[in-house]
Length: 510
Image (cartoon, rainbow, N blue to C red; front, side, top):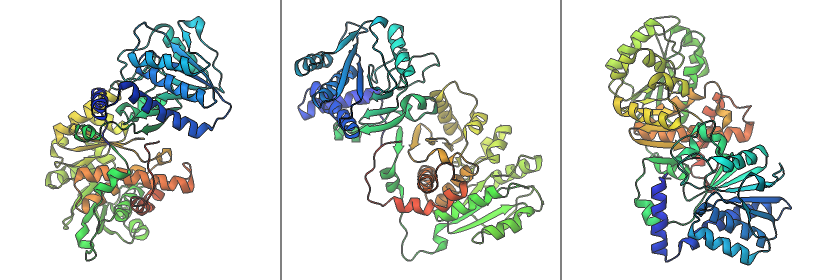
């Protein structure tokens, strides 16, 4: 799914109105009705006190429509107009008249602090104060109103965008921003929803299709994509009946050191579970018996050193090399990693201590084979690209790093983001249970297994992250977040493949 800019969404609204022969007010009615439908489906006329706070622009107009429909369906609703200016949008004014004509409860104007209603923790609050067009921090008594809503501990539903949140920058700690329990966004999600620093504002997320012009949306270009089930299905390459293991490549997993052999075992297991035809592991001698015992499907090669990698030598020709898990960063290991980089031409997967070596020895960055996949967690990323002020700057720095070194960068997190030049691919699977030791090692194995089978490195990263997250979701359903360990994720990669083709309705929700 494409993630569009504010300007593109505004253009989509305009073209939709022209081509469908409707007015902007009719489009507003359509969008707001969809929000009402979602509320009504969940509340089923429950006797809850609903308070709707409407701005005076089009987001406020959405709130007025929702308020009118809720009142007409028998809900206990009070609608408040946050009267911060005399400049009201045309569609707001039209719906302001409609709600007065069609209901017994007229909207109540809020002109300052003295007009604030009491908001209790049992209230259902709907935030329709500001939409996606906000471009400066909220100030004055409106900021105090947002603070009051946040402090109430009421359930807060944000319409399209939590008020005070920007689409293209992270608010400061002192900015007034609604902390929504749930956000219902129109047509397409916004990039900011998937960034760690915005998590506390968005809450759970649902996107409703308000039927904007399909032709425009299909043709509009975007360098940000959200990867869900339908996108993942399009990346999958089915096998043929007469294929054999040689058709699916040979993955070589290099890493490990004394006490850290488990990491490469997890990576190799994941590569096998993802479908690599052959998997070999290259490790220090101390790992030989362990690896041969726990993973009989893999072949094991050993370094001349007992406890760490000091002289990587092998006579096979792997389809892809994955390096770094548990390798340590000793001087000897750094030197043999440097030698490996210089003699490797095919794209690699580099993780963990491989990334740490690159961070400490930046001269090695120029030796990385083009189109290699690097998979840092936030701290590893910071060591690679430097510190950032906010998540948007982080993305810009990551794009620059990707372009400069001609590599693919996977920023691991709740919504892992694959960076390839200017293009971003945001993953929409996974859960908090995957914050467990070894989960990243499994991800490297999944990506390696896909590259081994001939998937393009970028597709391997994007598809691999999806499968990894889906496997984690399947495990969470069976074992809980707390009960999940990395080995469980690896074991359920096959279930993630099977899930691709289950007939089930998918929605953009977290």
